[in-house]
Image 1 (tube, one colour):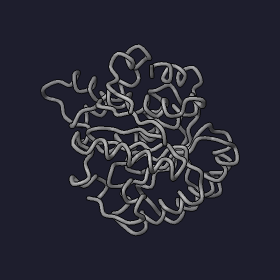
Image 2: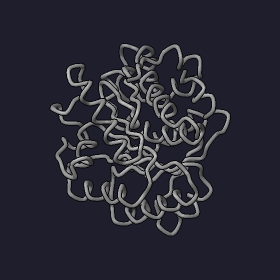
Image 3: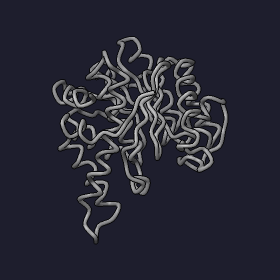
Length: 273
């Protein structure tokens, strides 16, 4: 049952440090608040070590990279490792440019990552060390489907074993794996892809869940992924005929605000392999 994980977030109210995408930073902050945690955003190299020290978890998102933020990511990541705080990497657009790909690999090589969350093209790029993506979106040729599901489950488990990280691959079918088990999650709506930043929001949620559930990290990540997908379903059910993707974004955040353990347990759609 994943509902206990969301209840633990609301009880412990973890403070999450986000070095994240400028395009989505406000929505990331709001969704963390909606789940009952607290966000803090700092990407100045002279500031991040102290900020990381007062937080419970770190979200590193490479969506809008520059040399200053790369330095900050390394400083914050190493400090988080010192303090044994959970760290997530969201390798946004890895494969779209050499800077993004090499930065993601540099972070993987130098920081212990509890979770790596990305679309399938981004994750494949990290496995291969190079690749191509359609901007920050997954290539359609890389989709996780019912036909290739067994193969992709083993792919996720193998990458988890190699990295020591929980691997969260998000798309039409979401996979959350460690080296032994994989949650196959079928929550969500295709329309979520019409909103900039639902992936970034999820990457803000996951560290809060992991910080609040340190003894069941795999379940915590799966709970966060189910929460986001279920919120997409609930938000869509509340959308009026004249409303579009801007309102839908707000409906998703509202659904997360009202989410509790019972709602999550009743609405989560997953199997474990």
